[in-house]
Amino acid sequence: MKLVNAKLYEQEIKKKMWEIWYDEKYQYYFGGEGRWDFSLDNNANEFQKRSFAVLNDDNNLIGLISYSVDFEMRIAQWFGAINFSDDKLSFGKALRQVIEDCFLKFGMEVVEWNVVCGNPIEKSYDRMCQKLGGRIIGVRHNRTKDLAGNIHNDKSYEILREDFLKARRKHYEKEVS
Image 1 (cartoon, rainbow, N blue to C red):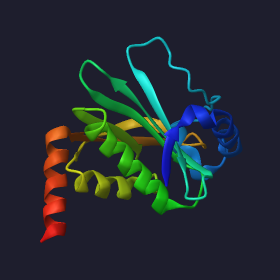
Image 2 (image 1 turned 90 degrees about the vertical axis):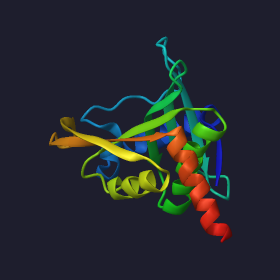
Image 3 (image 1 turned 135 degrees about the horizontal axis):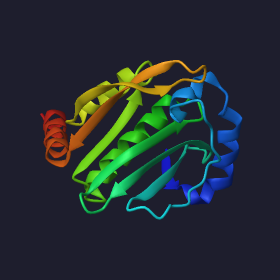
Image 4 (image 1 turned 45 degrees about the vertical axis):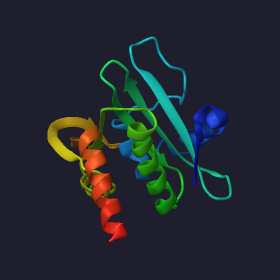
């Protein structure tokens, strides 16, 4: 698994997005009934977007992980993660690497993200958040829709830098003993 600048794969990602626009498997990524053309252009707001193409061991594009950065508060937020393949293991490793990089490489103080309740990945996010020292900070009601227009809640997660580092130390101490 490799993470590379998504700009290198922008056209391929755009095409893959078009292919899955109306596939129920991916409906929770969009968080509503609308669809939009994929673009890596940063808008003129205060947050910069970081986007990574996820490649498998054969250098084939299998997914995209992106987030916005609030540089003043050092918060990585508004994550988007989409796996175009059935390679859940590689994609999961990539997602974990992105979160680790937020803290260890880019010096973030907080990582936060949401999931649409009912999304099959929800339980995996619950486990991953706990393993990385984070917590569920709440469930918001009636926040998003699926492809058929049904209303869903969403769940918010956060991991603080100090809690991530504590969980990481604990994990490595456990491996050594």
